[in-house]
Amino acid sequence: MRKLRPDILPHGGDYLPSYADRSDAVCVTFPDRCKAVPLKKKPTEYLRQMFYDSIVFSPEALRHLATQVGSSQIVMGTDYPFPWTHTSVDHILNTPGLSDAERAAMLGDTAARLLGIAS
Image 1 (cartoon, one colour):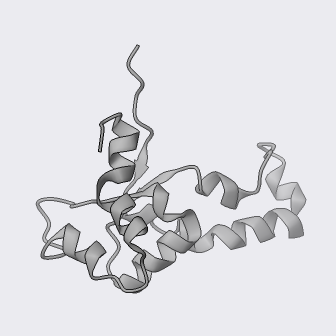
Image 2 (cartoon, helix red, strand yellow):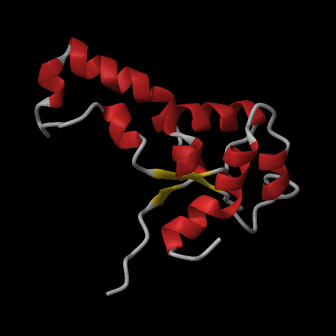
């Protein structure tokens, strides 16, 4: 049986990674608001299990996304045919503060792992 890929949240997960810590705080401060669906983990832990594309619009945003969810959860996105960047590769390569391993994960290692393709 073929394993299906997990969903990948577009545009860096939108606001979710930026509000991750707030979600944890809400569950601590107002626990009754988190009882509708009992959580076995903190919201931030669930966010680190999801996958995100790299379509965020600045190096700061890409570094923030990697900090919040982990670089191993980010795949390169293009949003073709919209020309948000000159090339999606350059956006990742030119973001300061990322290690070579983080760049490799975003540029293809994570996608290859998700799709069962040898990298």
